[in-house]
Amino acid sequence: PVYDTLEEESEYWRTSAQQSVQEHTKLPKTDRRAKNAIFFIGDGMSLTTVAATRMYLGNENASLSFEQFPYFGLAKTYCVNRQVADSACTATAYLSGVKINYAMLNVAASVKRTTCEYDHEATEFKGLMQWAQEAGKATGVVTNTRITHASPAGAYASSADRDWEDDSEINADCPTTMDENKAKDIATQLVYGSVGKNLKVILGCGRRHFLPKETSDEDGKAGTRSDGVNLIDAWKEVHSGLGEAEYVSDKASLMEAAKTKKLDYLLGLFDSSHCLYNLEIDEQQVGDRKPKLTEMVDAALSVLEGSEKGYVLFVEGGLIDTAHHSNRARLSLEETNEFHKAIDMARKRTSVDDTLIVVSSDHSHTLMFNGYPTRGNNILGIGDISDIDGLPYTTLSYANGEGFSQTYVDGNPSKRIDVSNYDFTNYRQRYLATVPLSSETHGGEDVGVYASGPGAHLFSGSMEQNVIPMLIAYATNIGEEFGWVTNDDDHNHGGSEHDH
Image 1 (cartoon, rainbow, N blue to C red):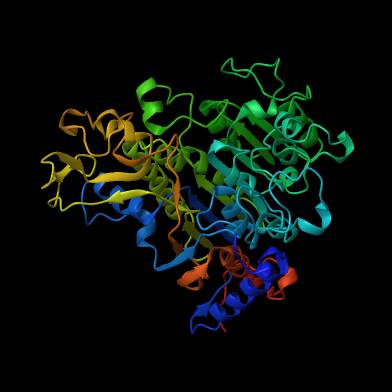
Image 2: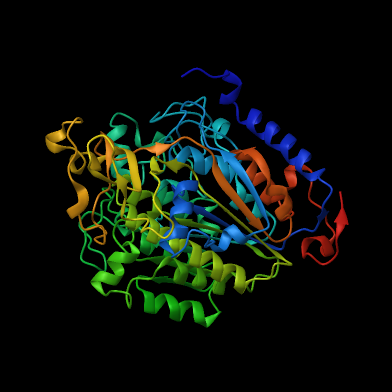
């Protein structure tokens, strides 16, 4: 990798982000501080995905809920040592304000991936959730992936490898490291870590990383921990002394718990690995047991909204990404649709006067939207016929991935398969792909940033991704160390306005 070594220093990113914040705050806008912030990340939600989802919803001129927000910008997604990023280095950028190395979480770029022993104190740093907690705000994390997966982990964990979701993975990578020097796995940090322990709401999937190998979860699936620790029990124990705490594992218990309005802490884990796709929930008719993203966000807001000093909630629509990785475009567009519904619900449920909502993506994908299909053509169907080989092609296709084997006869790039008989209504159908890969890659172009509520005007223009958490901190009056926090209660609660 060729880059300025200054980029390995956390301070470099902090300083440049603060300079950008100062430039943004000089914009001639009336600036009111937000009491609450909800930060939505559509994992892998490229601008192409957004555009295609409009058509999935029925019309080229349709508009997703967040596209109606008044302010829009673009974020650059590269990480320090890669042109095309993963979800861990990007999560660190958009949650902690520092760009770092590929596949690592909240550890400075001077440390290389899978380093078993390093100076944790010198290289790990605080982020948005800790700033919010220090300011007395309630905090929460919601995802439909494993709660220990890269994006949600960026909110509460530091790790030299995103794959260290439980101790068995650390043991495999660091067999000679003494136990006392071993890094803490991500699931353990969620239960015992200074930020993880103080999260009021944690909703997602990934029970396996919280349970020992010999223990089965509510769906009969075994855990993967090798230390014999049941971290779900540990979470209950840790929080029993801190207030009213409840663990839930299905939709009915989640709704019941959220309705009480008495809970101080809520942990919900709804599957062994990632949550089911929306279309799987529908097909398997398990909507009575498995909550969808909108329902999880609704429950999280029920727990958080009573907080006197406000809250900061991080939400990931994570399955947009996993569907793209398998070249299954229909699955991805339906997940984007669910993401849009969750945002619509959150914006309608909260006040635009005191709650900032920011929507973005961590990185894009190689999804292409091509040909010259007529208006109203099915976005998931045939786009046109090639004037060279006379065979049809789909409007949506990928630059690489498993779809290659369904694109070319015997993998011969000079002979395309006639796709006219493919069933594109089947969500398992893979779309055309040019290069054979076991998993489609991310894309490296900029992603959208959409904002509504107090301070939303700060999120316009082209920005580095690591500026986003700084802007959220500024708009919500947190992050005292940066020198912008005011102690005026009116400003805190969006009561009066002041100009910068």
